[in-house]
Every structure is written in structure tokens, then in C-alpha cells.
Amino acid sequence: MYVADHRSPAKAPGAGEQVPAAPLDHAPPLGTPAPRPDRRPTGTAGKVLAVVFAAAWLACPVVEPMPVGDVHYPLWQLPIDLATVATIVVAVASLWRSSPRAPRHGIAAGVMMGVMTLVCPLAGHGPTGWWTATQAALSLLVLFTSVALVRIWPKVARAVS
Image 1 (cartoon, rainbow, N blue to C red):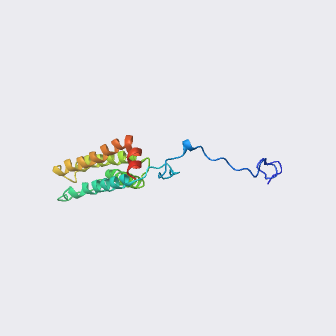
Image 2 (image 1 turned 30 degrees about the vertical axis):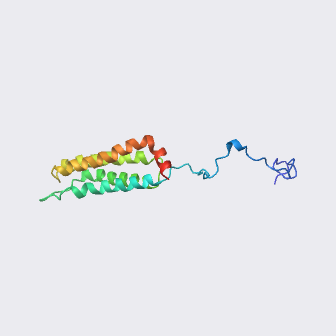
């Protein structure tokens, strides 16, 4: 330790003094847990929504019938498909971990799911039918739920834990 250091035991005045206790008016009520140091929202709300979002994304291709005939996959659709998969995986993972950015990731996933709902009939590998409306409804579910979560996510995630 440096000789001129103010924290040196030789230089510290009153080295044997005790630190005063915190005032009682700032103490939490008895029986309340100590606050978590990481400030991240926690709880089961994110896990439930993660499962719902993953199920909605998986249900979209399940309800669509297989194309008939010789259908070619257009390569311009590949970046859209990959971006959709990436956004839904990130949204589900961030919801599961109760990340503060989870609602915004969910918005991106809902938008990309909607884009995929529009691109499938435009690419010509699937006809339009009741399944298109179902896919649009699932995409809107993810999108509007995420939009609502932007405002209430920290309150919901902390309250459910």
C-alpha cells in the first residue's frame, strides 16, 4: 500500500470505530425479500409468452396445405425466410429469459411472420385459403401482443415472479 494513501490503516483516523447502522425509516418491512441486484424482469409471464409465440410460429406452416404439382422455391424468398426464423428464435429466447428487449424482439417477429404470410401466396407455392387467414391471425397475435408488452412488460414480468 502506498504511504500517502488515505485508506492506509496507519493514516485512517478512528480505525476501530464502527459503521453506523442504516436509519430505520429506509429499512424494508419484515418478511420482504431483498431486492435483486440485476434489475431484470423475472417471472413466468415471459416463459408462457415464449411458448405461445413459438406455438404460433410453428402452427403457421402446419395449417398450410402442401403445394401440388411442380413448385419451385424462389431464391429471393430465402433471405425473408431466414430473417423470419432468426427473429422468432430471438423473440422466444428473449421472452424466456425475461429480457427487457423482449417486446421489441416480439414486434420484429410478428412483422416478419406477417411478411411471410404475404410472401407465400405471392411466390406461387401455395394457394390462398382459410389457412392464409389463420396465418395472418397468428402473425397479428404475436405482433399486437408484443406491441402491448412494450408498455407493460416490466410491470407484468416483475409481478408474476
